[in-house]
Length: 353
Image 1 (cartoon, rainbow, N blue to C red):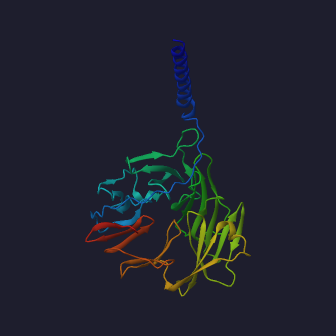
Image 2: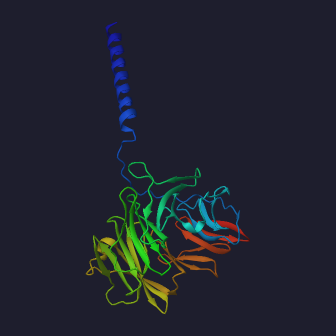
Image 3: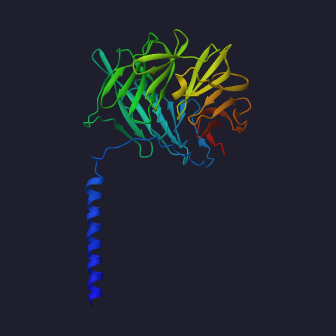
């Protein structure tokens, strides 16, 4: 009898402790007040079912989501989304003409960032939305006070022509261009607002985010040089002994890729991690090409893999290991999930497996 009482008391104590712990986690640990630390999550490419999905021939601005599950394109001034896994499709509901919007797939999530231009009087600004194709929801980006803001553009004639995300935090960088071929780079924090960046040019060809340090690397078309921001300073990037350089890409690991240009063709690729970019005493890794290629033929993926595309042979060659991927029909888009192409007005996604 005594042993039974001891066992019964132990069971009761155990039950009470478990109840207290569950109550704490439910009411405190998992509340909305929890501070969130963001980290980049790489999606695994969706396993292709080799579907051939009907596709409109006059579609424009075709892009793939990171996993390759979704394809977006313009048609009749509307944004269309196709699920490449089951063939379903949607047309995104927009309140204005499509020319007032800029669309950008997230670098590491099947989610789209949308900027909408808003004009009030003689002033213009933008609102930011997040679109989730999984449940077809378009939500306004909210600040700390759960308010959707309108962020001012540098001039009323400006439009957003590029968006780069820092997937390590909630910051994004915008390129705003006006009809006078003037570009402005802006840093947008959804809660802190938008500010113009102290770059050395208003004529910028390409720019990328160095995610770990939250800095930019860009190509100045005025002096034909490359720069990286360092706090409020701009530092020139150069490769000793080489001229005519072009900024090609910065991958998810902040590896910087620069091409040497001769007769408008890329002849060599130089590669260096961003931590070493400002240290000109450290040499660049040189990647030699078997033949010169145009910029349209060279594709550097977010993983850092480099492919040379041959549209006539319908192949993409990995220049580092020599493997070739064959695809059917006309090339449309490439990313880490595969190569999107069309044959007889049907879409096919070819994986690297």
